[in-house]
Amino acid sequence: MSETEKHPVSIAVVGSGYVGLVAAACFAEIGHKVVCVDNDESKIQSLQQGGIPIHEDFLPELLERHRNSRIRFTTDLRTATQEAEAIFIAVGTPQSETGSADLSYVDAVASEIARSIDGYKVIVEKSTVPVYTNEWICRVIARNGISTDHFDVTSNPEFLREGTAVVDFLHPDRIVIGAQTERAASLLQKIYAPLTTGAYYDQSDAVPGPCSRQKTPPILQTSTKAAEIIKHASNAFLATKISFINAVANICEAVGADVEDVARGMGMDARIGPKFLRAGVGYGGSCFPKDVAAFRNVAELVGVDFALLREVEAINEEQKQRFFQKIRSALWTFRGKSLCVLGLAFKGGTDDIRESPALDIVRQLLNEGSKVNAFDPAAEERTREVIPPNAQMRYCSDPYEAATDADAVLILNDWPEFAELNLERLRSVLRYPIVVDGRNLYDPAKMAQMGFTYLSVGRPANIHHSGISTQDPQAGLYKPGATRGF
Ligand code: UDX
Image 1 (cartoon, rainbow, N blue to C red):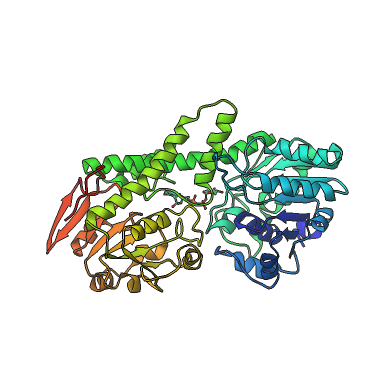
Image 2 (cartoon, protein in one colour; image 1 turned 60 degrees about the horizontal axis):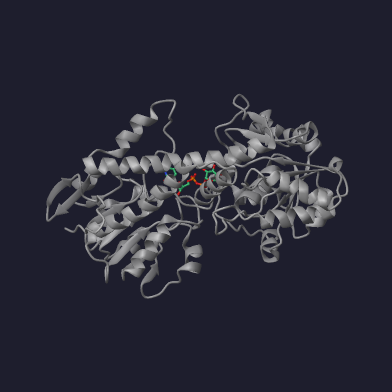
């Protein structure tokens, strides 16, 4: 029996969204006693009965493994607080109208925790929050008459990506602990000990990933403020990398160079690194758009003009528009055209459609009078709630059904299966062999060879008219006011 199994920490995780539910399942997986709290009764009921509200690799297995033994679900925050040594706040921090993070859920949870505290508790911010949040939580709790000896508020940001969240949690690049007291820091160290000692990776049923007994994740202990900034600055930096490569892609298009070669060449420099240099339709999701805006807002509040982040946001918006113009350049007009859309989620591997560039594009196509035949391996159900099926919008069960009789295929996210289409079959069902690829999943030379007109991002377009293939370095180049057709 491991040390953690002998002495598990009693943990409450408040919020059962992508971060909360994954964190709760993973804390149980590494041996702790976890209660996951949410005020959404139907969600909790469904979780109690074995429902899985999100598409996330390994999550069903972990919940199955630990449900009713190490993990349970409740709406009762009061009892959960009283029973827990550590309470992780993982509720939503949506974007307010000004771009700042709306912290009203964090405030409400902190007040309720304060009213239930009956002994020393470590309260942990897991949600992405601005740098002043820790102090506010402390103030809210103190206002409820709780003495500062009875609690500590710490920051332990989460860096997980949707789709690979469980692996990211159990095999992190680093574990950041922002704490003001040794007492609080040592409880967090105890919670993560199965990962930092490597004991977890010796388990025969451990979720596989890059960490091992020999390669354990490092802990970085900082002030709470530094931990809060680490999270915002990391997301803002990654978004900056994406906007940077998208701007470079636009230069490549203008001169006829291939952005994939450029990204490879840049990424080979160890100081730059190859990750997050994939040009595309722009970043989306529940984190980058919100966190870039929130970090810019924090900077403004403290008197720093972080103009770079405004530019990152502007490039991202422009990228979606450019891609739409690229589709226009392949089709000339939209009204009455039938388009096969592959990908609705903001990226492959997830069912999340929040801030999805794909949905922005679908909405524009529908506005311009196109018919959309859409396929996404996981995001159909969520998309149906915001774009119900009708005569213009049809949901299909595979890529070939979506492509049948379509005037073009549009690839809008990067599910691995979209990179492995049977191109012969695709061409045979399409009305015209046109592919506009927002994720650069195919080799332009191969597509040309197979007779496709192929437009992608930051690479010369291949235009195929009746058996003659030409490379147009300027094709797909968005010129305001101009439409390009062939
Ligand atoms: C992100 C962070 O990676 C994670 O650390 C944080 O905890 C939450 O936010 P996530 O939103 O799940 O995770 O997705 P991620 O894989 O980072 O991609 C974000 C967006 O950027 C997606 O729209 C993706 O398609 C896009 N992207 C990513 C690119 O366009 N190019 C890239 O090279 C990488």
